[in-house]
Image 1 (tube, helix red, strand yellow):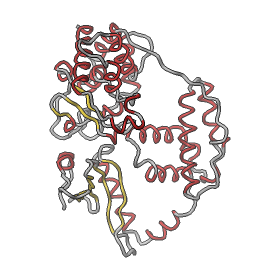
Image 2: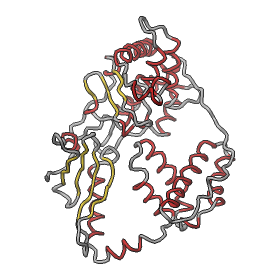
Image 3: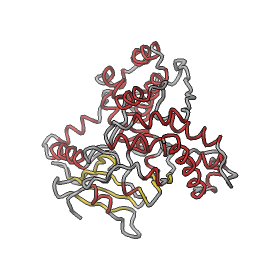
Image 4: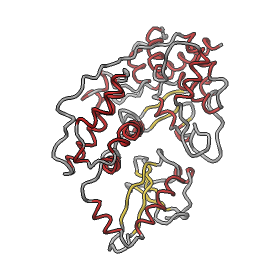
Length: 389
């Protein structure tokens, strides 16, 4: 099948009954297509017969939820140039030799991270790009040693950024472990002895007056940023998972996030009270993304937005993730009429696997606590609405 690919076309693409997947190819860029699985996962692919090869070759470009159609088309055009080159097969053979660290990172992303959640992929690749590739990228992956990575993490630890330093160490270690598995080196020198990274457990809980201050500090932001901040207060989703939400994931009063985008690979759904629904931004005609300023890229709540909110609210240090702890703490202290399993409902709202949903118990307990979650989130919404006036 061929059709001009758009977000709407991809969202409406249906897998025929009894089939595992369906493919739809773009009419604008030859070879570019979308493969949709029966599970609902959609992936941009590129399929073409390389010059000099006897068979078609298919490669995955990326998940549809992680990149725009235009980005996929740009990558497909690059691949088309490679595939039509008379040197393609020779270049591919050369790539089979030992890669440098930068090339190993790309291969690790394609081969090892493809089945991880979008949140994990973004966090891992962001860490590697920001901290590791600049100094290690040109080194052959066989030549990367402990001292190279220590030179990156030592300044971070000296500045008190132990959690970041640990993320860097573990991300590089994962790439080296992948390199061992694929025969590019004999061992991973980072797994034997690790630096003593100091654990910094956050315990920040915002008082309701502080919640109200952050809410009001969001008023001068753009419509999309204001909506994202206020809905993160009302809905205890994880930030990165939430910002990628689509209108097609909103079913009546419930917003759902599919398993491929969650930290624990468990789908989650939360109830939007009338007050929460009123915070949604206006829907664009050119995109299925809820939080976007251009219709193509997911809106970020980065350091600039956080700084504006901190200055506007004038309260001590806090992070967006503290909203989840704030919700949990206040709702554990609240008394909700006719609710006996309050803790389990709060954990379900946070998409945590508590004791009732781990191991064998988790296999059999598939309860969604939908009615209880609605009561819990309505109570939290009422509490926030009173606080913000």
